[in-house]
Amino acid sequence: MTNGDGAYGIFAQSVGGGGGSGGNAITGVLGLNGNNAGTQVNVSVAVGGSAGNGNTGGNVTIRQYGGIETNGMGAFGILAQSIGGGGGTGGRANSISLQLGAKCTLPKVCEPAGGKPNWNLQATVGGAGGTGNDAQTVDVGNYDFITTHGDKSSGIVAQSIGGGGGIGGDAYVGTGGLLAIPYVPVDPTLLLKPLGTSSLTRSGTVAIGGNGAGGGNGGTVIVANEGVITTHGTKSDGIHAQSIGGGGGDGGDGEAGALGTVGIGGQGKAAGNGGSVTVTNGKTDLSQAGTAIIQTFGTSPTPPAEGAPSADPEQGYSAGIFAQSVGGGGGTGGGAGGLLSLGGSGKAGGTGGHVTVNNYGGILTHADDSVGIFAQSIGGGGGAGGSLGISAIAVGGSGGASGSGGQVDVINDAMIETHGIDSYAIQAQSVGGGGGSGGGKNGGITGSIPALISIGGAGGSSGIGGIVNVTNNNSLHTYGAGADGINAQSIGGGGGSGRPCDRLHRRRRQGWRCRQRHHRRQHRLWRRGHRQQQCQWHDHGRRRWRTRHLRAVGRCRWRLGRRRLRRQHRAGCDRRRWRRRQFGRWRRGHRQQPWRHHDGVSLVGGDLR
Image 1 (spheres, rainbow, N blue to C red):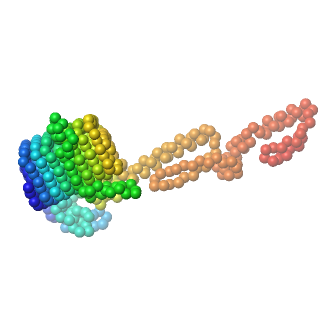
Image 2 (cartoon, rainbow, N blue to C red):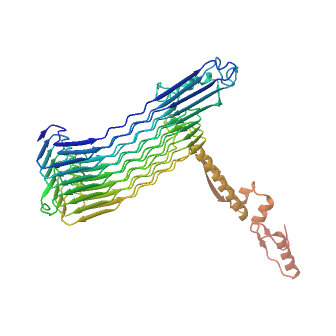
Image 3 (cartoon, rainbow, N blue to C red):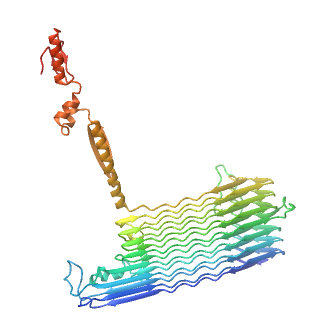
C-alpha cells in the first residue's frame, strides 16, 4: 500500500539517452576603407554542428502476484514504460559580413564614392538534427488485486514510446537568433547598408536550414489481467495500454535576409510508427465472464434532468480498458527568406499499429464518458511545408503525407455494463491522419508583402482508416444517454491544403481571364447582331459583366450607325420593295387602302413619303 500523490505501487522504466545538441557556429568579417583603390573580397562561411542520435529504450517485463493499493492523485497501481531516446537539436549558424567605406554609397542620395566595387560572399548551413530511436517491448501481467484511490490513478499503465527526431538548426545571414532590438523588426545589419561598398551584383548570400531527423518507432505492448482491478477517481482507467511513435524532427529555417540571394528551408523528416497493442482481460476458460474483475467508479453519473443530459467535462473518463496505438506526426519543413526562397518540405506521419483486445472477464463502469472497452489506432499527421519570408521568387514547401490507421480487433466473451452518459460498452476506431498543408504563406512581419512570383506548396495526401472488427458473444448493458452498445468506426484523414499564390498575382490572373471571357462574348454578340450595353463593376480585382437588350432605338443611336439602325429596326419593311408592290397594284387597277406604317405614319393611296 502507498500513500501520497505520485506514489506508484510498481514502477518499471527503461529510457534511452537523448542525443546531444550540435554546436552553434558564428562567423564575422569586417572590411574597412572599402572606398579606396583596389578590390576588397569578404568571404564568410558558417556551418552548425550536427546533433547526436538517441539510444533505444530496453524491454520492460512485470509480473504481479501480490495485492496493490494506492492512495493519492497520479498514483498508478503499475507503471511500465519503455522510451526511446530523442535526437538532439542541430546547431545554429550565423554569418555576419560588412564592408564599410568612408562615404555613403546610396545612389542619387550621396556623393559617389571612389574605388572599385567590392565582393561580399556569405554562406550559412544549419546543423542536422539527431535521429530519435526506438522503444522496445512492454509486457505486464497481473494476477491479484489492484485498487487505487485518487484522480488520474489508473490500475495498470503500460507504454512504449519512440523517441522524437531532432530539429534541424537554423541558418541566418545576419544576427537572427543572436539578439533582438525592441521595436526594430529587421536585422540591425541592414541599417549599415548605406555605408556598404559592395554592389548587389557582387554580393552573394546563401542560407540553408538544417534537416530534421526521423522519429523512433513505438514498441509492442502486451497486458494480461486475471486479477481484480478497481479505481476510484476521475481519469482513472482500469487498464491503459499505449504504443506511440516518435514525431519527426522539423527542418531549420534558412534566412538569407531581406537582400539575400538564396534561402532554402531544411527538410522535415518522417515520424515513427506506433507498435502493436494487445490486451487480454480474464481467464480464457470464461470463469470470470460474469464477474466484474475491472470496475471504475470515477465520479457519480449525471442525475436525470428534464432536458437533454450532458456529461461534465471535468469528471468521469475512466474506461475499463483503454488500448491505443498512435503514429507520430511528420516533421514540418523549415521556412526560407531571400530573393529566391525555397521552403522545406514536410514529411510523412507514422502509421498506427495493430490493436487487439480479448475480453473474457466482466467490466463495470459508473461515471460519465467511461467506455467499457476503448480500442483505437491512429495514423500520424503529415508535416506542413515551410513558410516564406520577403522574396522575389518564392516556392513553398510541399506538405507530407499522413499515416494510415491500423487494424483494430475486439473480441468480447464477457458481460460489460456502463451507467454514465456517452459511456459505450465497446468503442473501436481506426483513424487515418490528416495530410500536411503546403507551405507558401508569408510569415511574421512579411505576411502582407507578396512575392513577385509565388508558387504555393502542394498539400499532403491523407491516410486511410484501417479494418475494424468487433465480435460480441455476451450481453452488453448501457444505461446512460448517448451510450451505444457497440460503436465501430473506420475514418479516413483529410488531405492537406495547398497554399495559394499571393493576392497580387491572383488579381492579375483573374483580370486576364475576365478580359478573355469578355472578348469571346463580344465576338458571339457581334455575329448574332445583338445590340448590347455592357456594365462593369470592379470588386477586388474581379469583373462581373451584365448584358441588357435595348428595346428603344433612340437609346442606342450613339453606338450604332444610322445605316445599321435602319436595317435592323425596319427589317421586313424595305421601302423599295414596298414601292414596287404598290406600283404593281396600281397597274392592275386595284384600289389602294390606307396603309399604316409600324412607326405611326399614315400613307394614303400612292402618297409615298
